[in-house]
Amino acid sequence: MEKLKTLLHIDELGKWRLTLTNAKNLIEDVGFENVILEIVANATAVQIFDSVDKSIDHEMPGLLKQMKELSENHVTIIACRNALKANLINEELLPEFVTVVPAGITRIIVKQTEGYSYVKP
Amino acid sequence: MEKLKTLLHIDELGKWRLTLTNAKNLIEDVGFENVILEIVANATAVQIFDSVDKSIDHEMPGLLKQMKELSENHVTIIACRNALKANLINEELLPEFVTVVPAGITRIIVKQTEGYSYVKP
Amino acid sequence: MEKLKTLLHIDELGKWRLTLTNAKNLIEDVGFENVILEIVANATAVQIFDSVDKSIDHEMPGLLKQMKELSENHVTIIACRNALKANLINEELLPEFVTVVPAGITRIIVKQTEGYSYVKP
Image (cartoon, rainbow over all chains, first blue to last red; front, side):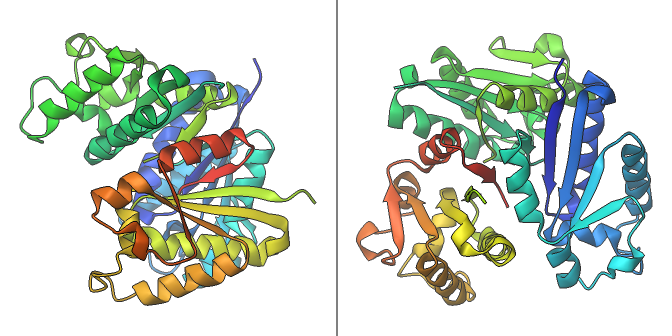
């Protein structure tokens, strides 16, 4: 079976639970060894990585824990630098499993040219 | 003219009217004989198939009727089993035009590898 | 470098700022000479072109100005005729940089068959 190359796009803070559920359902359905999965966060979605203000959503610690577990199963978690700057989030303080790219939008487009399927939960 | 292979993705209950309008506009524009159209519902979108609680949206009977008509024009209507379980919806009681898949997310990705265009209304 | 063929889909009036920010970030990241970019607006997103009622969103003049600037950098701005009709918007009064297509949904699908990446901000 060819690996399912997949990009999940999230650009709203409130969509993390849904997005991570999609990731987990995919992995449970086909097995993580059959997936190449990348989650690209831009716009307000990156606010989940704000190390200072953890008060905006009490679910966040749980969601970050899920992200960490996914990253340990070879899921790539990407944050957009433009969005981090716009939301005044210090790149140095991001969780170690987050990869920063200059522009999330470019990443999303380029990955599709490489055969990734695009899903926007 | 090659048939336009299309997957419409819906994951919010409130997006059915918009999604079905997209389906109908596509069919009216190019003719249903020129389209291979599939609608994949996951997350809360599957609540429209709850045969017990019809009170959450008084538009539902009309929307289900539109779905039935689309299915008679060869549109495939797919529901995600994970979402049905999460929303406590009995698979046995679904409208007969609904096809259940183990994971909607997998369906969405695999169809794109088969050349389907993805649209998220 | 091959040009990045990209289609941004917008179907909500409130998503214009986010959509145009995505367009600008893409162009700033790779240069407008490396992008073929099209923005397709359907459903309520076309209300921004309502020449009569400018009161619904005081940001609109600024957003229309951004659209005009993007169009001068070879970004194509498309409006769906079905949506214009549904929102009672006179096609004759649209800004000159807007191109009307019979059905936005068809445009979105056909462009993907031509190798465009799809992004829904």
